[in-house]
Image 1 (cartoon, helix red, strand yellow):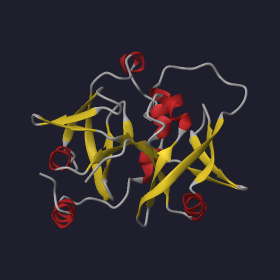
Image 2 (image 1 turned 180 degrees about the vertical axis):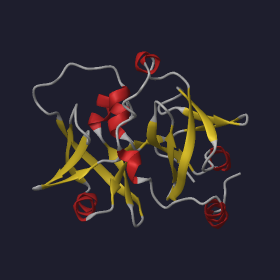
Image 3 (image 1 turned 45 degrees about the horizontal axis):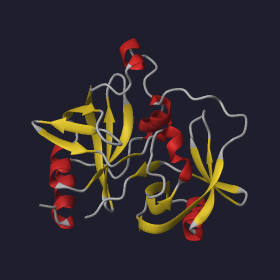
Image 4 (image 1 turned 90 degrees about the horizontal axis):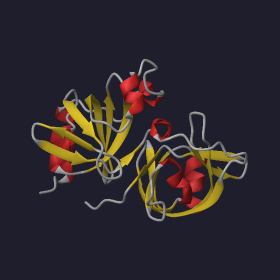
Length: 220
């Protein structure tokens, strides 16, 4: 049974949910990552939920551990709200496109990731390309609030970081002037970089809009 929006918002508020991810959660994963993690980045790992917020059809969860620090997107469902309660200890494991988060015998399948630098750096190293890859992305508006813009469409370079469904993805963009302009155009050049803090950018004239996350479409 899905939560009604009002009930979900009351539940999130009672759990001291913040409205956005913590500033420090956009940094790269801890430099003290263990050798075992480096050799098996998709192995199961224990994490804690630092924050949870509601954005349209998605929950945005900030999770962190000794070797992992990232933001995950999950569908708005009763099980995901229970599993992703702030301060909860959870188990993250490889499953599907974006992993599975489990706690107390329940599991929430992540729908996306909003830490694309960390996700890119989890993937096997690819040959460095001499030219920065670019492709045309097209989309339709999906949802917007004070912090984020969500658009759904074709993002053909998503496969560069192991996300195969680039023909039908939801992109999460900051709700700033550059990204608002990009979202309204419904088409732009998508650029991918193999190094640096921003793997994906939408190029809009002389300005650029960083893509903060990719997710599979979900239904409410």
